[in-house]
Image (tube, rainbow, N blue to C red; front, top):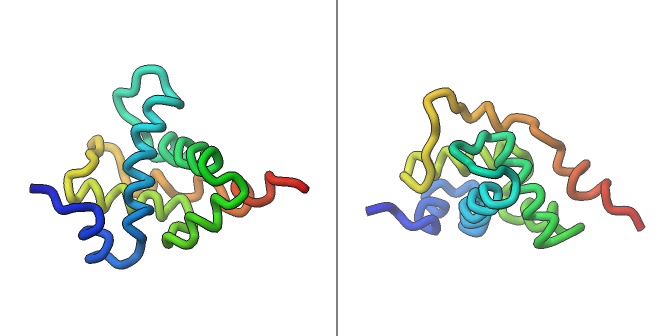
Length: 117
């Protein structure tokens, strides 16, 4: 039986359970909204989908929300994904690595600087 995301987050201690739920939900969102027939979603594609979802849900507060959950970079999305892979909530292809999530975009640039007053 799989551990609950709350328990996984609690044991790891780096990210809020909400961050883990957001990434898990974001995988489905990305599959539905960013590519026609997903056989596999790359780390980069998932990061782009998570960015779109965060902006859609929270607008200019997206960075604040994600930061409050311990998520400050796209690498953090990768850390969450690989934690979920370890606990069988997600799966990876043989060529996938956590490095696929490195520096996909800068949080400040996409979540803060794009909004003008």
